[in-house]
Image (cartoon, rainbow, N blue to C red):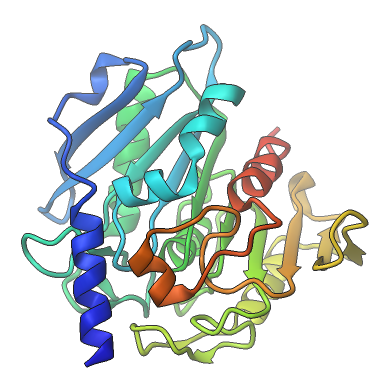
Length: 314
């Protein structure tokens, strides 16, 4: 009964974000533009693009920002604050929408492989890799996108989808950085190395660092996030490994893998006391009921952008 109430509440939460009037992304306009397309799997899909008020003459970075399970593109936009970072740092950010769980509710999920929900592999043959590839292609036709700086981020199911993009769309995706995910595809075989930052709270019980069933609403048996990031270091051919600690925040520590192929880097950043909520960004009431109050002393969006901005492809 509690699970149903929380699901219903989150449905109302995401639905309250509203729907923007649809415009075409080819307008190359600053601010937020919403668009739709028919994807290779025959579905009508939607996404939202924020461009800074000054669109540079030179190619700009593009960040694909993917919401968590039960969220939506506009919900993640509201929760993450990536618009402000894009305005300040001069990059374009896209917020694609997963597929709906229920009609008339803006709660959505991604096909990250074994996870999640109605989009999971084999459920409805959802081609989210094809969708994201098409989004990047459309935005690149409308805006001056730098192909050496096309990045992906996400939260939870969106983080899982980030891993899948690194595994299957590495010719396009240059680096990924995200919070709380795991590799949920049977085989990860990137066509070229991709830099990775995996941010994870040590108090995250929705997706435990060692994997297994979490206590979130998905009831999924997650692959190990720890093994996932180690797998990416192996796939990138990394030979150097060192532990690190943040001298300004005793809660933050982790591992960096260096000497990786093509100058890539792999990093695991762990945060003591942080739960599943997007760090540094207060959620709405139902989100906090579902995940707890966000860890306040680290801004996930800032840390993620800082990593991505320094990992362009040569």
